[in-house]
Length: 328
Picture 1 (cartoon, one colour):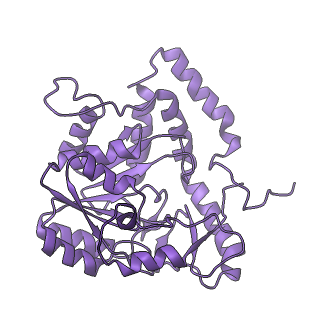
Picture 2: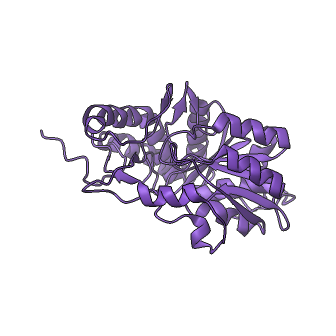
């Protein structure tokens, strides 16, 4: 049978897993528990084991990021630094907590946060937190130095891993360098549950607070929180997708190496030892058919900030994304 073309959109779901998914949904129906049950715990355990970190499932990336920043004590009068080359969700979680956003430029080679500009911004703004974003599916090339810089200044570091499913550097997963990492399972992601998110961290007290945060601060309401609970049915999708994730990522990388690399000399190139989850296959040469840009307008432009971030503007104008959808 001929495989469908790579540029025909497909959710990253392996349809061989339908029966497995239906079995898990039947388990939920039989349990008479559709929220805060065993399936969510199973999803968290799988994701946590894969990343070597504790994990708390949320109904969205936003819930994971808000829980992390709330634990860091971010509030009115504080500054949170984040790249301008990102989705608006990144700065909006900071402004939702009443903080001011300070935008940082990106690098042209990996589209991610500039270490040099971050050094400037930390000295200028004395932030409570920094959000580093892994753009397009790979780990930010300077994540080690960014994490070291934040530790040296006592700044909480949140990794925005919304694109970084399956991304590794010398075997280390995205989300493991900072104080916390926030994943998205939105419908277009390499691993998708339609809607959903996951918070990962090595700090037990942060994870404990996040569990309360997603459920109105229950049981004692000493901690703040709202509703970011994940449905058990959505968690079942997460279990199936997590079990399949490394296979999905390996398939996308094989196709990229064999079919796309030979015809895209101007592609984004990864350092040795890094594997991208290939949420996006980024090139710096115009192409006939693109899925668009990762982001076509930097956040500082959207929010009307009068600052000079030349790399962010350059990246918005000079990159494109080659279609690459999982179709085993």
